[in-house]
Image (cartoon, rainbow, N blue to C red; front, side):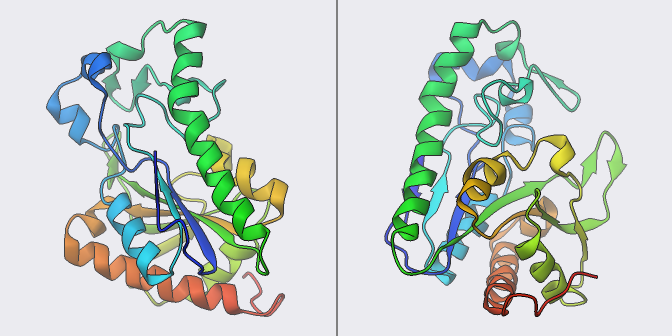
Length: 248
């Protein structure tokens, strides 16, 4: 886990749970080959680069995980099977098969709890100030899943609190040139809004999860384009007076 720009004073705190595909040596690559570890099952390609750029553009603290989501998915609670999946899309994960309760608890202690504590600290420091921050989590998704192409370019996801998602969807409407949809390609029913529910909802913070199709951020030019687009529209959505932007 790493915290970047911890003293950032902008209106947002950023999280990137799937920033890295690194598997510590003790896990022997989880029994996987290079192809699998470089694919979307091991991390969210491009997400860290976009989050880093947003951290600069928005002067926002960023908490990013430094190990693969296959070792521990920090967007899942320890009791979730998906926290340490034995299967991801078409890949079997040998190193996650048959984990004992003690092995699962150890991974949660090593990777999930420090990430969760670091993000909570960033939010609570800001809450102690004059302005409550918004929590924004940055993810990417594969253009083809189980052989089915996806037309969505940007997914704007939310849990029970839809305020910031609504404002962002309205701000983005017709702007990006990509298909932008609510709670796609995943939604809260898939368990993907854990960080929002765990960290933002109890603090009554504005929050949103942003999913970016990873072919749009496969290089530096795409990452810069998407980061600037998101920064502009996040600022617009956050600046809108309460009730001004009405979801359609």
